[in-house]
Length: 129
Figure 1 (tube, rainbow, N blue to C red):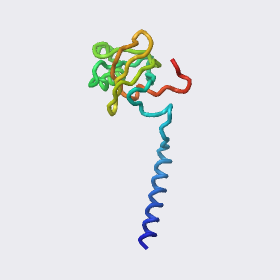
Figure 2 (figure 1 turned 45 degrees about the horizontal axis):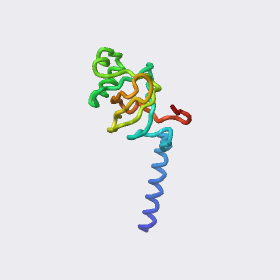
Figure 3 (figure 1 turned 135 degrees about the horizontal axis):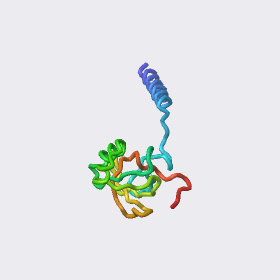
Figure 4 (figure 1 turned 90 degrees about the horizontal axis):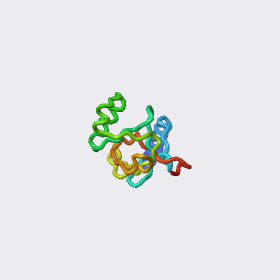
């Protein structure tokens, strides 16, 4: 009887986890949709506005995100550098929620800064610069 009970528990667990996964619409990471890691080339992205502000210090990246949301240009100019959205960057270092990046193109090429990971995305198919 214990083998039967074990099988029932395993099968029930599978269906519960499957249902939770379907409800959350979980998708596996792909080449074009995944968490960025050190050494990868990425693209800066912003939901609003045409620029992303890179904090000069890692500890300021969240504050830069808040300042972008509040449009606090004075704070941003004092602790960050503006880079156009769509600019290619290379991930140099990573923590749980932020990435240190180096700008790879444009007038800010070579500049380094910190940004929350939601402002960088993997390159898409055909994005080669």
